[in-house]
Amino acid sequence: MKKYILYSFAVLLIFSCKKEEIKNDASEEFPGGATTYNNIFSGSFEQPSSNLNTAELLQHNTGDAHFSANFVTSPAIRNQGLGPIFNHISCVVCHPKNGKSPQPFSGDDLKGLLFRISVPGTDIHGGPANAPGFGTQLQNKANVGKQAEASVQISFTETSFAFEDGTNYSLRKPSYTLMNPYISLPSNILVSPRLGQQVIGLGLLEAINERDLLAHEDISDANGDGISGKANKVWNPVSNKIEVGRFGWKAGNPTLLLQAAGALNQDIGVTSHIFPSENSFGQTQYDGLNDEPEVDSQQLSDLAFYTQTLAVPKRRDFNNDDVLSGKQLFFKIGCDKCHTQKYITGTGATPSVSNQTIYPYTDLLLHDMGPELADNRPDFLASGTEWRTPPLWGIGLTPLVNGHSNLLHDGRARNILEAIMWHGGEAENQKIKVTKLSKKEREQLVRFVGSL
Image 1 (cartoon, rainbow, N blue to C red):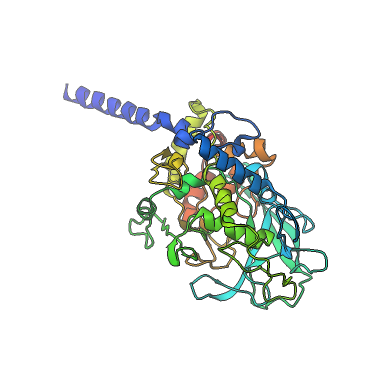
Image 2 (tube, rainbow, N blue to C red; image 1 turned 30 degrees about the vertical axis):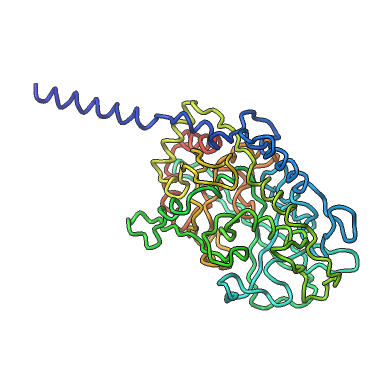
């Protein structure tokens, strides 16, 4: 009788655990909380948060116009200030339909790829040190009569691998060479390729309480799980203090206002009250017009507000059995150790993003991803092997919205599974676990990630 009772308890426990494993939180179907957009189509990344009031929607639409605008050279009636050196003429070139830029195959068209540059050492605030004559970003285009800083040559190396079940796969690694510089490049220049990311849900990420982000730090890996995330601490020239970085591939920006101002200045060559100097100042390309700032504070605020109020699309196949099985694998493997599932936001830039239960699947922290993904360029506290965990929401809609499935910082991964197999460093153990999965399990894992 005693054995029967123990056996019955064990069976009950097994089935209880199994039921708990596949339990789905109903609110996760709406990853952006009340901001979530419900319709799924090719414009799903271009929708305002669903809970904006009339005044907020008006400001969002004004910011949308700035985000889509093509800047031109000065003087001009509207959208003046392009260049004299730049990467692109608008925000949407790097963030097409507010999504991810595809990986370029030729230096003749870099699409949304740009290159951060520096030399060893730091500036006075602990950030990357300017490359003499080039600054901290390479501008590969120039106005008429001016010279671009350099051009880029791209090549690829393909390497074959196999999962433990014998299924073959390959990874394609790009290499970049800076060509035709307007002056000699520093011999010790550090180069980091960065591809334009999707811009949905950023206001929600900005509204996460700093203490909730720092609670996930484990810099010395005190719990021994091999994961040692840390927050980047970066200089904010608006507040004149060091703050926690949240945005960009290495969490190099603390706020969306600063992100917008920096992109205008470095990517397009447009000045603002935050960055009032041309990116070419001190170089031979400098125009000397002294017409700064080229966008006023309201335009900049509206542009930042637009990125703060873009909706996150609703989940797809939320209750599908394979998706649920893939979710179990995601947590069993330990992917959630960096891709943190859930937060409740604090007070954000607008009430629409405040006090929302969200499911971004990121900790916004820096993690060592190993030598194969390294750019070997430090950025404040980020080492040359560390990258910020990107949010996964919307990842499965990239083929629909942008017509490709390129992932990672330079687009080298051609799909979700390749992105997983590029993981190394702190995620090496998780990658090894994926190599041991069956073909069906790999498909379930990918299908779950693609449902986010």
